[in-house]
Length: 143
Image (cartoon, rainbow, N blue to C red; front, side, top):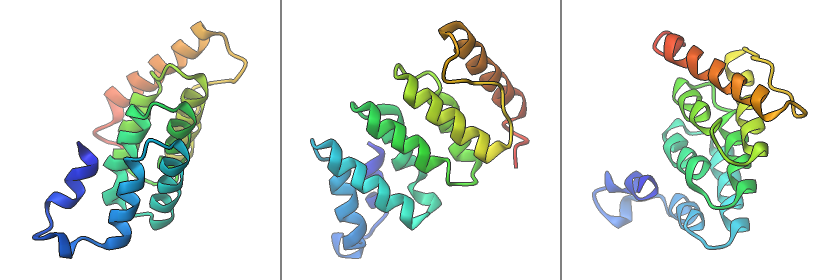
């Protein structure tokens, strides 16, 4: 699990930042509000080392509101790594997560493939295909 891997490189439990450990513990909570609060704290820190943790929440959390917020947090990072995670999130089953991922991608890449909240599911699927195609062709050269 990625969340645990952030602390694996530490030589001992004493070398792990206690505040960061508290945030990671919140991400493991059964309470969506705790996971949401942990994302707020990780976003506030703005450390690119936290991207895989935020992405794990984006791609795997059971609560769509938490996943949506994770997409918003990733959208604050000007990072190629964030783009890859966000492109994957475009396949989420919750439309609000898909829209949040699309908006985050637009912020980072300055590209807009025409996602609209009132678009039909087939139109949204076409936008997803456009993002995936762009990422496949341009991802290596992005930034």
